[in-house]
Each structure stands twice: as C-alpha cells, then as structure tokens.
Image (cartoon, rainbow, N blue to C red; front, side, top):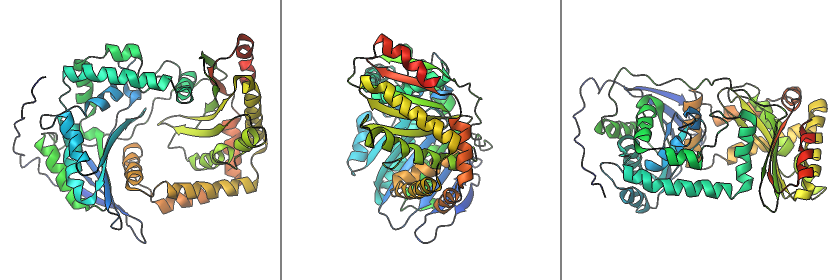
Length: 459
C-alpha cells in the first residue's frame, strides 16, 4: 500500500489573515435559531444556526458541483469523488476517518445530487471540533490514490447494480432521461458501468482541483454551536491545508442554469422481469427560484402528498390498484419536474395511468376546491416545521440556501409564504403545469400489446 507521507504546512501570511466579513442574517427569538454568516478572505462562506437548547451539532461542507457539471465521458465523476474523499488524506487513512467519528458516537456521510454535493458529520456539541477537523481535512487534503480509485470502483459498480435492482428507484432516473434526454440533467448521478470503468485517478484529481476551490464551497453548521468558534476552527483547518490562497477571491454566484430542453409526450419503457410495473407520469415543473413554487408546493401536496390527497384516494383507497402512489416536484436552477409515481401489477398499469391522467386533467381544467387547498396548506406548514426538528435538517436548510439562493429565509417567513398562497394562485399554476402534455417512463414486464398502448396515456 502506498504510504501517506506528512505534508509540510506553511505559516499563513499576514495577507491571508485579512479580516473576514460577518453578518447576522436571522435573529433568533422564542426557540428560533440565530443564523450568522462569515465570508473569509479566499471566498469560503461559513453559515451557522445556533440553538442552545440542543446537545448536538451537525457540521457540513457543500460543494457547488453535481452531476450536471459533468461531460458525457465524466458521468459519475462527482459521485465517484464523493466516495474517494473518505479514502484518506495526508493526515488520516480511511480507517482513521471512520474511527474518529465512531469513537465519539458520531454519524458521518455524504450525498451527491445533480447540482451540489454535501459532506457532513453529526456529533455531540462537545465533539464539534473533531468533526470540523475531520471533514475539513477530507475536503482539503484528499490524496485520491490510484489504488483507492481501483478499490472504490468495485463499490460504486455494486451501488449501481443495487439501484438497478430497485425499479421503484431506477424509474426516477429513467424519467429524468425521458424528460431531458442525453444531457447532464438526464444522465444518472451514479454514472453508468461504462463511464465508471473508464474514469481514471488522474481525471478525477483534475475534477477535484477544479470544483473544490474554497470559492465553490459553503460550510454549514447547526446546533449548540458558537459561530465565532466555528469560524476560527474552520479557518485554521483551511489555512493549515494551504487552501485559502487568494485573499481577494470571492464566492461564485448561485447557479443560473442553462435552459435545458424538456420533452413533451415522450414514452420510455424499460422491460424488466419484476412483480410490479413502476410508472412515472409527469411534465416540466418550476425552477427552484420561481415565485410560484409556494403555490406549486400546495398543489403537489393536495394531489399526491398524503393519505387524503386526490391520487392516494382515487388509486389506492377507492380502487386498491397500487400500494404506493404519490406526486413530487424537483426544482433545478433553470427548470423543474413534476411527476406522479405508482407501482402496480402489470395488468393494472393502464387503469392506473388512466386514473392519474384523468385527475391531472381535471385539476388543470377545474382546479382544486377551497377545502382541499386549505388542508394542503395546513399539511405543508406542519411538515415543513416537523422536517426541521433535528440539527441535520437545519444544516441542510442553511447550507443549501446559501449555495443555491445566496440568502437565508427564516422558518417563520417560509410558513408565512405558504399561508399566503391563494386558491387562485394554486389554480393558475395547476393550469400552467398540469395543462402541459405529459411524458411517461415505465419499468416492468409489459407485453407487446400493453407496451403499444402506453402512448395513450400521453396523447
């Protein structure tokens, strides 16, 4: 095994010790956390939410890179790199990284999406300095050794195989391809067997150096934390690694997108010998910055967001045609998706699709009732708050907000936005979104005659 030599550390210059800029973005009162932000010389942003009433803290680093930033040949590189940052640095082996957090009962993980990547650790508040040191070391000092690339290739190929063995998961990748085609948004985050096998250590190292500059990173920390201490510890870790090289560097702006072309009326079928047929019927949605997203959230909740939703009642409760049926939205920088998922027996797939299409068409033409909208607003407000009851969710909220919007919104402001949605706004967005011609993705053992009829669902 290649030895991991120690790295010499340069003493930070007086220029690198330039003054950081700190702002209080949300003043906490009545149990609401105070959110502060510091931008270091070198372009690194640090955002914290302080909640003195808890005994835990979650520390994360968000990178402004996702599978959307890959070429066709590099498909899967972002996710591959996510794995490799856990494999060792000049200071720690892979075992050292995992053992450090295990020894204090901490949790450590990462995830890759189409427009960002996040690495995080959740620990007791007293162990936060350890979490900061380990995660910062991973992000700034990864070795990306060729032997680690070769070993991890096998694990990633197994992860791809595991996803393909779960058609209820795989159908969403198929739907992205159906809607966006063979471009970065339409390709799978994990990559394919061919692209993962073709990636080399040298190509991944170049990708790492390009996208993990401090100007592309946001540090987020939530829980029983002291903002000034977090800033000092993060700054010391990045300076020790020599990562804050240019004091004049500024953070990059939130992603503005590329106006991706989306499909209309397209059908894709992936034949598999499964017990169920898995379907996603959907159409273009809203970009994450669209002001109508609050009304879209209410519409989505009423259509397929719970047991009282229209789709759940019509497909499962009244007819028993599916166990799992729901709707969802995905927002990107410049576009979005709205989809309806259902898993059912292959013989029932056309009945399920007909009911779903009828409900979407009915709501597009006639809207939802005032009672449905009021119930959806209440459900959405409650789920928003309940979903932010742990420090991990709070870290995700402030980190993603800074990276994707460049601003923070308090929970009270979010609840006010949801409560302010009017029936007319919901009906308007229903006409705009649900009135479009849908596309369809299906995975299952459909026979030729069944497959030929799938186009009826998008006609």
